[in-house]
Image 1 (cartoon, chains in turn blue, cyan):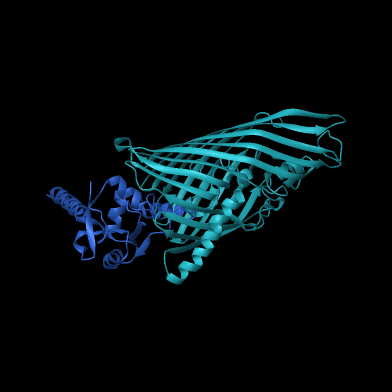
Image 2 (cartoon, rainbow over the protein chains, first blue to last red):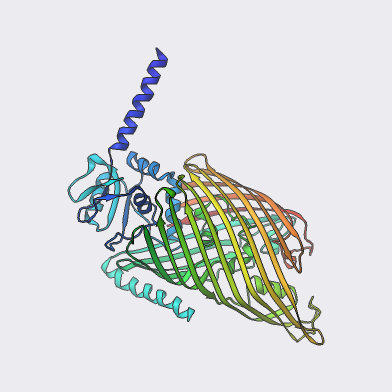
Length: 138
Length: 399
């Protein structure tokens, strides 16, 4: 009985975790002419390899300092927090990019993406508001 | 010409800094500063004071500014200063200063062009040689990243092209190629030290061209990449006056010269980075050929060469959010006219602690067997011990 409970708990935890993944959203500035991104694009943008959108606008990466959505982004990128920041510092100190904007909350992230042309962020899908739009990643 | 190439982005960055500061536009400043302690056992490295009591002449600092004045164009400059024993002595230098333009994506291809003073992208980590924040150990493995050659491996004044090709199920490919030159100071650095040790007062040093290229395959296996890097140096011309008591069989007061026709350096690299684990291995093959000219009663010249084979294996593991450990095994064999079949190998254990995101403390101990890296003139007792090691402790703050 105890084993069954434990197994159910694991399945439930996994389901919740998967559901959180499914509920994450990549958001860009509402005026951006972008509807979808490839997974490679997502990695290139959040790891600082792609610094301009196709229309020439500078990419401004906005990330959370911590939290479930940020953890989900890092898992998607295959990085731990230290590797993620170190990767950006490599770019900064060789002149290849500036640092991403770091914010404390998802509301703050949405607000910054909404008022910054070229901005992109990764949040809980439930936090998407006017001024930003969620893009499909395939 | 190359000096002008450097000046253009410097002036542009300065002008833009003024213009954009007013508009509070896209301008970023970053920097770092570090201080360390370096102690060697049995031999001295970088300074004779490193042995036994150690030295605090082991620090560096950098400040950079970057701007995006118009879409797709990025300009910036970084000033860097370092003190490493008897070398550099905190003399500020332009680490990089360049403009970089990204073209619109063309199909699966992203391409950019860059000009100015460029970091030499060579091997996995040469760009980050001076950046403590990017690794666990204090030093990169010296077998491949020889600190004696640092001055000539940092930057070139020139132009380059770089990009990424998305290759679907094969992953992606990053590439870079650059052409340029260097203007080293004849009064310091490795070539100066070699001449000084031979009893020659170096007066001129010229490097005609430094060209390089590299290709990285980011495989479909997440975090696994392979890289091949190549550079070629041509037309190195160093000349000086033979002093009394020189180790060379030349007449004091006459001119001695080394002309290096070519240096080829190849590095094959592999890195696997996944979550808390980073594995890396690199193998290097360096080939140099040239000629020594002098006057031993009659003018003469004889050929010279140097072949280096080197490799290392490294594993780093972040075992808690703030702590990371690394182990390195390294090996180097140098074959040259002056040092046939000289080898060294060694092991490193390193530990890094990140109290906060912008501050780190690290320590490493490296045990080495072999004397390739050492300079006899730096040894307090005038003797090279084949078994030696060093302890390096360093703290770095960045913003």
